[in-house]
Length: 40
Image (cartoon, rainbow, N blue to C red; front, side):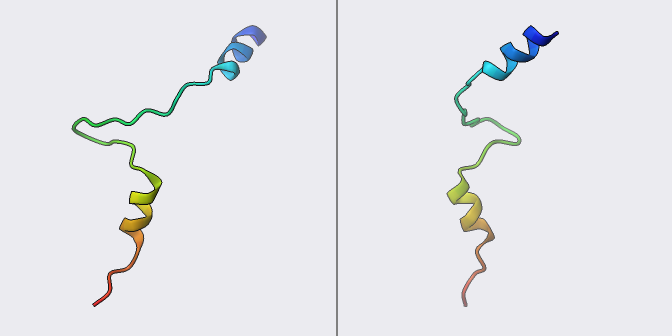
């Protein structure tokens, strides 16, 4: 069991951008822009 935990913790997968229908990962800059209040 310990070797499984070690193997999983050693995985260093790159963050992927999902561009399909449905929920997807948004860039942090996009999330920040969406939460900024509108002027005017």
